[in-house]
Image (cartoon, rainbow, N blue to C red; front, side, top):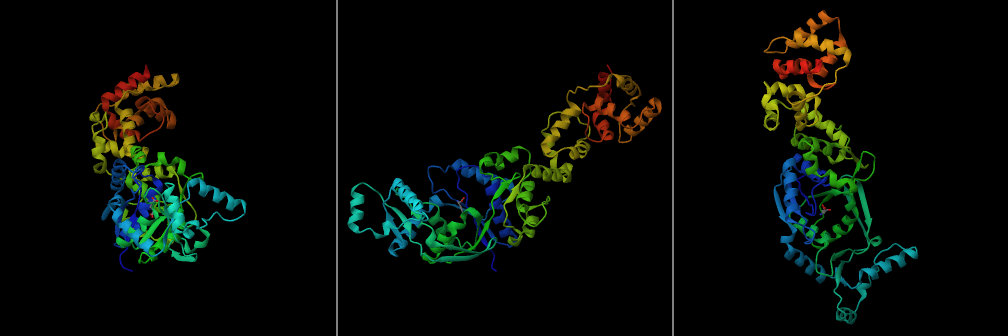
Length: 452
Ligand code: GLU
């Protein structure tokens, strides 16, 4: 097989969400795993709903995720090419004018259904005489244009779904050009796929029916249809469709929550496949493992909690050097004696790098600790026996051993009041490290306040 050329073709009418990013990712992983090309096509033929801001937004999102493209273009720059294709289809008798209003079409649909027939367009437009057309135009009607399907069965071997067939007599001839002259997505997509030598069309399974018509348009325009792969759609953890929730599942929002690009890619690249969902180090690693054979037919479950867990796995693997820039922006850490130790200490207790700031608050901000009356005396003793600084990782062990001998306390009774007094929290990172990070002065102040 020669190296694949694929395209991801979003419409710039909103921000990217996990659903369309999964399509982008699968395209990218497949192409890059085979040394191929990934093209970003901007489907902006709908001039009213498309905006440059959304276009920039989706480019920013893809860049942030690491899904770079080898080429990009806008459909809105290519109307002359689509006009040429229209002229050819008309000349070949494959594109015909129709004059029905939306209301008339709806009426036909209802009549067909009430008679128990599938609501397939009756091709009335195909049989109009020149006089009848002229009469409609005299009324001020503008034609829309339908592609004449063959009425035969179109078959392809889908890389995800296996052998597929669409009986084109069971679907309406698709409208390619609207009455106002604007294009629906169907034709421009095919024209571009031919010109850019797209070898594989990889998209969501909501496009399966389009593929029947599009394969015929590929043939009509003298091209060969690319290979097709239609992936199952995403559902939420509850098995329900995601469409209503997609707004809050934009990549921008997930980024704001502190999720890292590779966590998102690891999840979206693995859900719905036969591989385990685990964090991966890089997109290249994901690409080397990618295969259409691994994608199942069942919907892929997207669970934000699972994404957080993957991110926590990733956070654990990050070194201080990886995060030092982010930590530099965290308020309170200017008081930290050893930022590397801080990172190594808190990373087990957080799911996102930015959550480190809550531990900076605990260590260097104001805390309040609720010490039981029966523990106050113990905390007083702790304050009196607190060793002099500077502290190292041995200090805590020596100090608590001394306290144990002096008070007879052990286990939880020995440690929990100290944790509460020193951090204001009932749980958290290793106290031996916490004590070093606090330093003598802060630890002494906190014990004193807690004992009072
Ligand atoms: N703009 C279309 C969509 O987002 C592209 C579909 C395709 O990949 O052909 O649904």
